[in-house]
Amino acid sequence: MMTTEIATKGWDLFNRACKMIPGGTQLLSKRPSMFLPEQWPSYFSKARGVEVTDLDGRTYIDMSMMGIGACVLGYADPEVDGAAKAAIDAGVASTLNAPEELVLAELLLELHPWAQMVRYARGGGEAMSIAVRIARARTGRDKVAFCGYHGWCDWYLAANLAEDEALDSHLLPGLEPRGVPRGLLGTALPFHYNRIDELRAIADANRNELAAIVMEPQRGQEPAPEFLENVRDIANELGAVLVFDEITTGFRMTDGGIHLLAGVNPDIAVFAKAMANGYAMAAVIGIESVMQAAQTTFISSTNWTERIGPAAAIATINKFRREKVAPHLIAIGSQVMEGWRSLAKRKGLQLHTSGLPSLCHFSFEHEAELRLTTLFTQLMLERGYLAYNQFKPSFAHSSGQVESYLATVEEVFDLLARDISEPNSCNRLRGPLAQRGFYRLA
Image 1: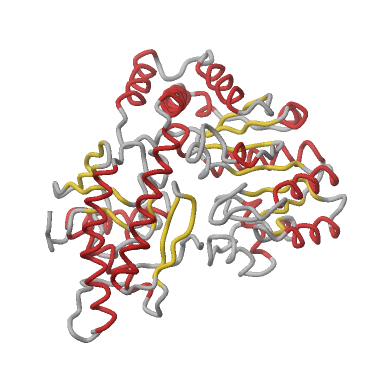
Image 2 (image 1 turned 60 degrees about the vertical axis):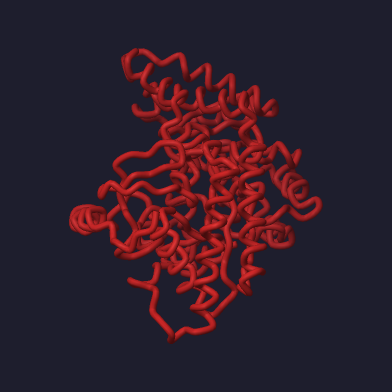
């Protein structure tokens, strides 16, 4: 499909939304201005497999974020949706508890033999807050050392109370800590991934005050030799709780957390996103001696007991294991990354690729990087693709679809190369540049 028409209904709706919903959306990563201002379709009417239909009736192949990484099996997976529908038919909530809670707990603990206990939530940010609360309750301490991005909550944004740029090198620049109590100043202490010296300095300066070390076990780069082992040793030495944030990395490189591949176990691991294929579900798993501290504080919510989330998670995880989804994600992501690299080289574009195969992205190494990225998204959209400089493969993506996508990327890369060599020859960009108030760094 080739069209130069703008998706008007979606933008009309988004403009209305901005008058009633602060920011226009519930998730910063779904703001259309992040992708293609005034042109991104913004809203969907239907999604199935890897196809998304907008409000104007146009259908696109999603070669971008796949529900911000949540829909690991593809949109509207019939097996998962069937489990959710069965849960609805049986009754979503009652005065009694849903037995799916126990079934899911047993499944998660089977996948992670180091853990003994499980608590649930329905979103990644709140699950991380639960993990930090448990760690603080267990240790009786307040301070948290962390690296990477871990959500919207006070414990994390407190890092920016001291200096506005504290979080800028931890995946999300420009996060404002307004509304975060000043009393939390000095409780969130950042270090960089693979910089064990920085963590050691934090540990030495806060030896009897550190409640937790919070981090993703892997993301944009591989752990340096002995890095994770040394982090584990420091946590043991201080009596701090080691928390692995697997909200994004879980169920993408293996059956469960990516830490299983590294062979280093945390005290707590946190999952959301892919574990339920787009349904609201999150889990905090951990060792019994730490998790029992949840009984000494107050962590409770009515909506954490509804039935659909656990039912969807059970179906998702069972299919993920049975169909060997992780190797498929790795193969599809690797095919895309290699395609990006080879096509950029062929067209004379300087391109940097990074990330895990199942969480990959690229960046143009050019002074007009933002313009090129925005134009890439626009040109791909005109050709029937939701495409961005990130790609999160799903089980629904096929090798043949990747080949068709890369053929289109080749055409678009050729136009981008011309845009660089002849910047004044024509203006292909039909709207403003994408916004960068919130973006993930390599």
